[in-house]
Length: 498
RNA sequence: GAGCCAGUAGCUCAGCUGGUAGAGCAGCGGCCUUUUAAGCCGUUGGUCCCGGGUUCGAAUCCCGGCUGGCUCACCA
Image (tube, rainbow, N blue to C red; front, side, top):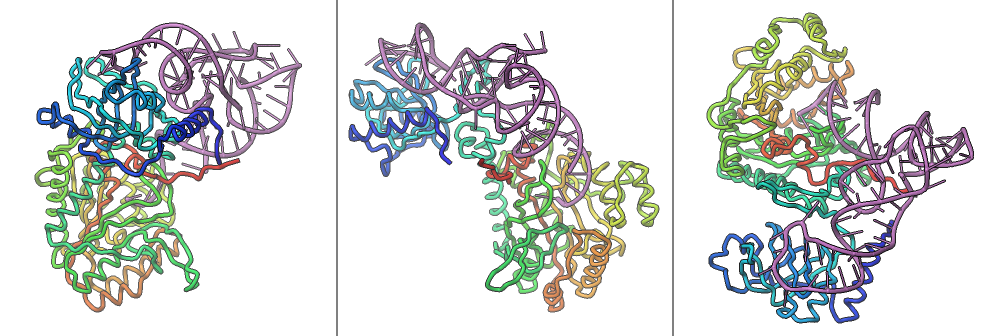
């Protein structure tokens, strides 16, 4: 669909006119010597020297035979001073036809203007790419040291659908994604430094597993078989532990066919990692160290600011058994309740309890409603009921619990970990229990994976495993309240054209 | 899925109890060789989300739909 727009028509005509005067509106390359930020940071050394910079025109102020404009590159903005007598009349005439949004390359001398702004005084200028669609450009002004932005591109739907535009005009959006990249880099560094091997496992799986969720279903034509987009990669990574890779991790796109809200996108990123010969106690220490490393790399500090809270990731985090947590925050001791009593207790707390929920799920409901939002400082919630953790090893001192933990920060869980279940007989029983839940109507109950059991039968060493939601972690470290603001292209309903 | 709110120029928005659409910015034409929301003069630009209804007359009122946001419920 091509929408008619007078502004676009005018710019298309400009392209024709440029070609008529021998200017290629889309040349092939430009030799850039400096980024905009280099010019600013290195001003002392660069003053009076010639540099070449390139970027997108973001503001123009023409004053007859001289002009100012700001260009923007990946690092920021820089002012250019463009005089007719310095770049020649022909080029200057061409420059005056350029629009906000065009890419240009400029060579010139680094100097400060009368008002003290570091600028490049152009002695040559060329158009690098013409933009024909107007940019929803905002104007900004410093007032009392504060940045006031006028006419900001703020339509949330358009910002997500046209993220490239959002990134051009809203610098704070770009900052969030730069941090996201740094978070992943820091985590990868930390894992590699700890002897982990980065691996890849199937996205298309004949049996989905490793989490409680509804999958996306697809079909392979040649094999004429159903395949599922992975909801987790846990069972494959554990197969690799069986195979002798003692420390593995994978940054995985996972897919869950469930509702969308500010915490959930149908595809999301999770890092999962597994360590042979370790248990969940070791993993808790590891998580503390890893999160500190990441915060230091991204913020230069272990203290982060999230949602008006100051959160300190350093030191030892509180380790709180989930049943104790429920007791502490609700005053109700659920540790010895049977299913019937639990149901009653939950109803008294005005929770909606459906018949397919088992005791574990009911406890999880209570926890999610009354405890989790209150855990602002980093906390490990540990030792969950066995029934809600079919892949975790039974607690060494209580067979009704498993050795599991969830790190909770800012009132939201950012991960999940256990001492991995490696007893093939127990694992088979747990799968059978999940089948019972499935028969009760729990659509998210896990499916028995015979080949995974086969692997455990070959023998898996004691292993600690961890999953961390990268999107959630990024929200936390960039202080964003919606997952859509940490995913470049969040899932949207397809646009309908009439 | 439910409730509330919103959709008007490229952007940000105004438009009251119905009388036939406006501002700033952007654009276009001028003036201007140190500006920074540059300024000054002039000016173009609209399927008022879509469809139906009420009315002499609808951006405005009513019904239906589409799209989005927020809140709530389930999953990371």
